[in-house]
Structure formats: C-alpha cells, structure tokens
Length: 155
Length: 145
Image (cartoon, rainbow over all chains, first blue to last red; front, side, top):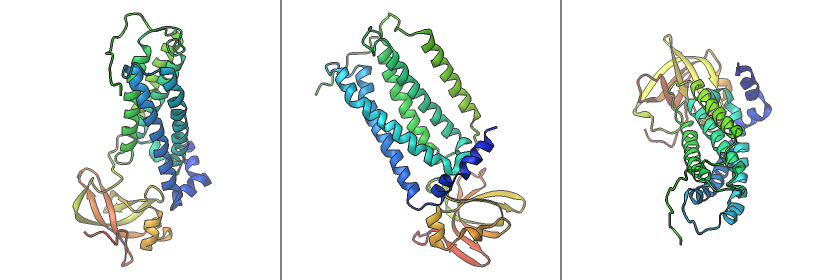
C-alpha cells in the first residue's frame, strides 16, 4: 500500500544525493544527534522537576528556558531524521525498531502537547497530571532513543 | 544544590482532562500498536562487527539485487539456489577499494570473503574482500584479519 510512495521517496534527487554522498550523510547524522541531545538534555531536567525533584525551583522560569531548547531540538532532529530516512525509505519503513521509535516519538510529542493543554500547566488548577506526564516523558523519550539506535543493528 | 524530592503524592482529585484529551490519548495508543504490529521482524544486523563471527567466511554467487549507498551497500546473491545478503561499504569505502557501481551489475558472479552473522539462521555476511573476475577489492585494507 505504501510501497509506491516509499519507492518514489527513494528516487527523489535529494535521496540519491544523500545515498551517494561522502560527507553530507554523516553530517546530517551528526545534526540528528545534536537535535536529540538538545531535546533530551533539556527535557530530562524539566521532567524531573515535574516528577517532584527540586520543588523550590520555579517551574515557570525553568520552562521558559528549557522548553524553547527542547522544541528547537525536536525540529532539528525531525528535519535531519527525514533526510536520513529518504535514501532507504522502504527499508526503514519495514523495520520493526524504526516503527517502534516513530511510535514512541509520536507518543512523546502527544504527551507533551496534552500536558501543555492541561489546566495545571496553564496554572488553572492543581492535580497529578504534570507529575504523571513528567515520568511518562522520561520513559517515552528514553525508549525512543533506544529503539532508534537499535534500527542500525536489527531490522 | 537542592536535591529534595517531595515524593509521589498522587492526588485523589482527577486532573482536569477533557474527554477530547482522553480520546486523543486512546487514539495515539491504538496507532502506536498498529505501527508496531506492522513492523516485520526479519532479523538482520547492520552496523559494526559485533554481530558477526570472528572467523573468515567465503561464498560465491550471482548478484540478483543491488542496493548501494549510505548507510551501506547491500548485495543479494544467489548461492546455489539460496539467497544470501552481503553487506558492502558506504560509497567512499567501495570507491577506495576500486569497487565501482558498474562492477556490481545484476548477474555478475562475485566471491565475498568476510564475516558471517553469528546467528546461523541469518544468511548474511559482512564483506571484507569482494572478488570479481579474479580481481580482489579489499574494503578494509587497514583491518587485520
């Protein structure tokens, strides 16, 4: 069902350029890692704060610093991720670990978006939602990185 | 540094979640499950050497399919009726060895010398030296076997 679409992706001039490149592909790979580092490095302290660590640190101030960094990291990782996917789109789309990783990324993003829409996040109420979302975020993003790394080693 | 942890006192009062939020969460969970069940589980290793045996292994066969390029190239070989996969290098490695894309045409007979996957169920070998028409192309000239 998806096969013709994936084949079309693989045949894009950009995909061919990435496939045959000496430097471009590894540099895109490095960009992907920088994106993941920024996301994970900023989301972990935020998640831990949400989970209950450092209660004396002002959450609003922490959010203002870490959230833009996390969002920048996600954008960088997603953009470079598409470029890494294109050269062998059909292979990746058939990889269990790749699909697991994408599912975990989707769940991590959904978790973040749901938290942002919660009353607690908007300062309109108190509940356990941020704490649960913080723990969930830690697990989902860790899982996404582990699954993503396994793509290179197993189908 | 403040390292206090104020415990997991989950409150009894329900967080203010709308029905839409819950439906979104259920939908995403279902989508994740679908994604996971779609993935085929053909065991096939890629990067590094850890998945391969330490002893040298050699097969000869005809190329039936070629997939070149980053992150690494793949040859599918017909070896006495059995389908084998040989992993070759990324573009610069193949080029350094003199192994051009034109040499790897479907139908060409090649001998692949390298490391076989440890799992005997996998018909997969990481190529170190590819021999075509009597000429050896060494992908890892600096690696000591």
